[in-house]
Length: 116
Image (tube, rainbow, N blue to C red; front, side, top):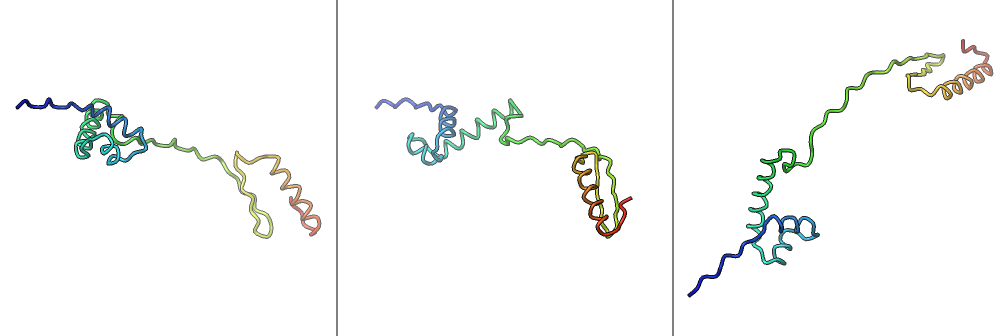
């Protein structure tokens, strides 16, 4: 009795095809007539080989980055009557600040107070 030739499976091809498909590993293996355990074993071998050759292609797609150190911007505080505080930084919109001061002046004039 003659032995059947061993069927070679291109696991790299199948892992790529399964990943590109919408099928789970179990569904893909069933549709292709593949052993699910063999699929997982060979996929792990492929991933480990890639990771050893290319460390940036390891299982994790994330790399750690450190955000730039922020330099504190100078800030100022104006304290007004009635415990009102206005905090101003270099980022403050000057037009908004001028408008706020104008509103405060009008408000204080009505109450007989001076902003200066």
